[in-house]
Length: 128
Image (cartoon, rainbow, N blue to C red; front, top):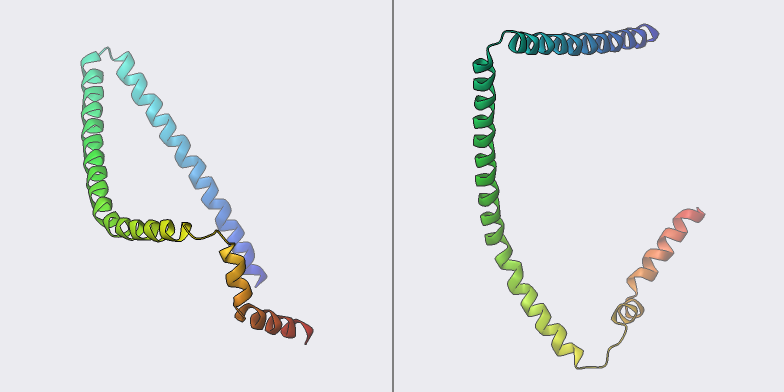
């Protein structure tokens, strides 16, 4: 078993080395590409690349806006159901507000006997 633990640690170390080496190689490739574009004097190519990136970004932005609008439209359809229930609940609250306000939670707990049963059962399991 000890062998497999050591093998796992070794493989994790190799994974980290691969990640660091890969990120360094990508960084070097980007530096070389930027140096080539800047030193080559080919400003037209750089401008075309920037324009292409800008167009791709605008296209992704339009797609994201369309998806957001679609999601908002779907959420409006789903919300219509609870809104009706909320209105009914507000009517009930207004109707009950004409009565004297009482601590309904405390009253409900006092009337409920189930919490006492549960409490006594949980106390019995601790004492055994």
